[in-house]
Image 1 (cartoon, rainbow, N blue to C red):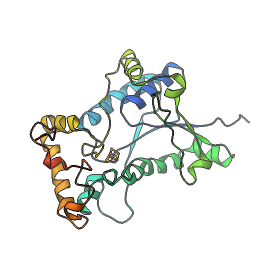
Image 2 (image 1 turned 45 degrees about the vertical axis):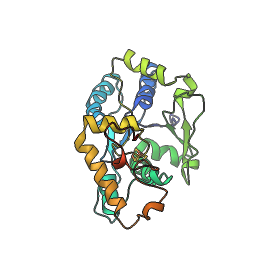
Image 3 (image 1 turned 90 degrees about the horizontal axis):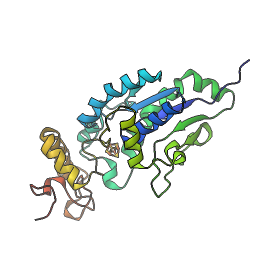
Image 4 (image 1 turned 180 degrees about the vertical axis):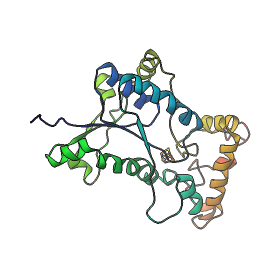
Length: 253
Ligand code: SF4
């Protein structure tokens, strides 16, 4: 009976690092068993446009297609992170220094697919761990993910870009060399981690989405969680509200 090989799952974010990770695997002839992308329902338009380009490229490599997944709440009626925030009169938890938005809408959204993959089921039944590749690049600080709960027993985490020494610039070069356009930074269009120039760019290129983000923020600032001017989280910018930025997007008066 052939020995069970350790399955390889890719958490694909559709940004530069994880795209470079797939390029590197293709170059080295390492075929993943599963590629998942968690769609919060609020990804940037450029990210949605990149998906078919990547699907075609993956097909040409003989890789499995991207399986798009989305977190489905057990009771609540919303189906997106945006809907989640609007219904609860809040903004993504990153604005409060927590990571619940990405844990729920990114990590938890992908887990059911991994649990159903026959290769994973077989590996776990034989006491093997599943390998999960994460696209953290080789910046000066070595970034890792510790895993929580059962993840520690069920998964081995692999950071190929760090092993290969690929920093951000190298990732971009490798993506070009593979014949792919370099994707935009992947994130929700209302992500509290966005810098002021990125907010300005959103307002210029996608005023409709910028307005939706402002409306979400206003819902928080007039809703049940708002603690008045003493609140440490002023809005989507955490210490500032996106709605308070002056027209040039810098926030400077
Ligand atoms: S991109 Fe930002 S807002 Fe969206 S899930 Fe991740 S941390 Fe939360």
